[in-house]
Image (cartoon, rainbow, N blue to C red):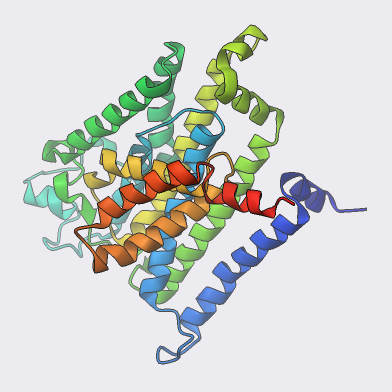
Length: 365
């Protein structure tokens, strides 16, 4: 008989898919770190610190795309504000990282440098306890989760749907961006947080720390993938897809979509927040620009390119688009946004089911 764990996994994915996911995960968390830490820098097989950091950043983006697919691909709710939840998680972790600098900042104060520059004499009340890592982790979950919960409660109770919901989420993230741009808000203004030194006492500049954060990002992505897959193949997932396909008929059958939509929306926001918390120590900065509506639109493009309603597809879409972005923004910096728009148009026109849909169609006999 199969073990309970194996049987549980096989209910989520076919054995071949599980094998593929396992191979990719093993390559990411075993092979890449070995090639970075153990192989000499002069070797052709060496993976540079820059590549590890870039891969870690893309893994965080893939988590965001996965969260977006849960709410858009399976529940039919297009959000143009998921960049807000990503940034809130990043700011929550950034507060801890700023406090970890201690007196090593430019001004030698226990206050963050931007507060000293603005002539602040003490920490605001909402910064208290931000030097505790466990409190920072709690805030990473609570900040995006509570914002999503409150917003979703009123939006879904009012039965706001379709393009109207998308526009309101875009307005929400724009409002938060303007709020965080203000110096008086206490989050560094337009410069945000930067110049991080360490996390849990480990120097962020160390290659080993970078690899550890990268491995954590890969593990978090795998965990989020399995969690979302568990949800969408469950009875809850069937209700979510019914909401997507015909919400009014679901109401006629006696279901109230409100609680289901609120749960999926809040969970999606929390996953984004965790991705943001992993992203910040790897890139070394967080500022209000991460809340830009353009970033949230780009998240939707990742999902569309990868294929909505597939989970794996958005992960692939986020990876491919951001790999292309890292090259094209250097080779053609003035044309990148036009190329991204062209890709979205072509995918929507010729491959409406995205990469995952095209692969599935090609595998059919």
